[in-house]
Length: 203
Image 1 (cartoon, rainbow, N blue to C red):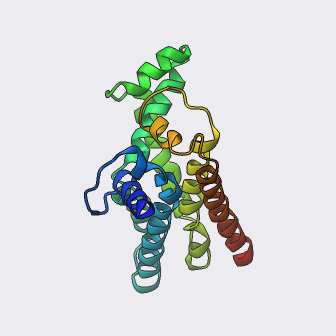
Image 2: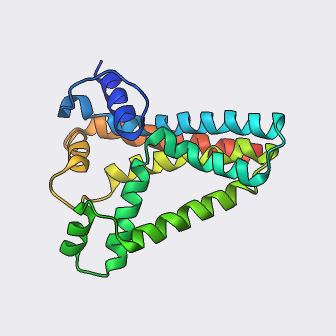
């Protein structure tokens, strides 16, 4: 039951998909990062379906196709990954000390470097999608579960910048719990292994 609640929390936090309301306590959040790649699988499935429809059954140009492919992840996640990306760009581009960068990360205002970073992100993403066709579509969609598996793995592998906050709550779920930590590592690594195997098999 706790695993199901962790799945619901992962979907609630990292997507805009409708899910039941449950308590966000440490017990329910313990394995939430295990299910982070599930969001990537959902995005990948939607991108694959939309791509197949556009490329097979319409005469739309590459720009329209690239724009739709670029915006589907934003629609599914609500842009939460882009919010973190923008904050990080602002912090890194400040060239300040560690404490100042942490303050910038908490600042709700969007800086100029964040805007520049987001523009570059969308431009590069759309440009990459404009090069995708029916043959490479099934390969391209795997970047979503792979990236989220790597993100989940980084949460349990890298040291937290702060001793409090949501990320620390996720990490507390596995610190001092050897079996839980092993499950989390194992699921992330399995997700990467399966994704990479599929990529090479298609090639």
